[in-house]
Length: 215
Ligand SMILES: [Zn+2]
Image (cartoon, rainbow, N blue to C red; front, top):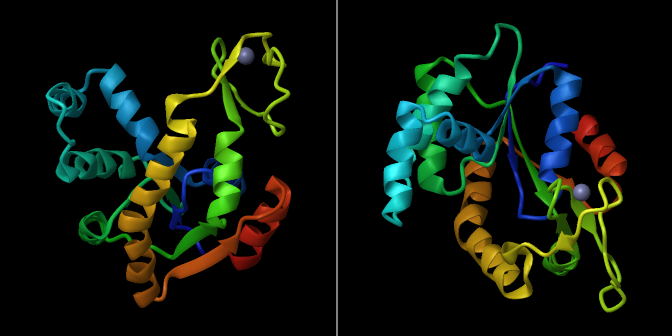
């Protein structure tokens, strides 16, 4: 497989995270989720983590430069002959530009940008039926709303709850932000001839087969 450096883009609920894990195993690539990266810097109280914490405590957005520095450090872990999979970054065109500069400085480049496409009404349906276990944090899908009597986790019997960002109003807000900020990066990468759309309707395996088909 020639393609090795991959960026994953898609709206919340597109199943990007699951595909990322399958892809990492198949390609034996360095997987970088910026969400995980942030949490690890914060909990390990690294210099970058402490700096990020200052902004977060003040209720301010963490500057892109900090995230870029985290990514820069992380990319050093990439082994020769192996690629990277980037999930959660960039989220807007300014970040996409900053990422291009970072990769250039490391003599790296992006081979393909996979866009996991799911229609909005399907996203709302998926997200609004998503519940999380209070004990083990495992995600669950409760399909038929209305008859969710006493939902419990099938892994640990813990109580299930709906995260506040999975509530209907929050979902609408998340999708709006996605439309405004993330969609322009699809054009950005399309102009560079890197964008490939993956129809993400169907089972996890069906979607992964499509991913394998384009790599
Ligand atoms: Zn559980």
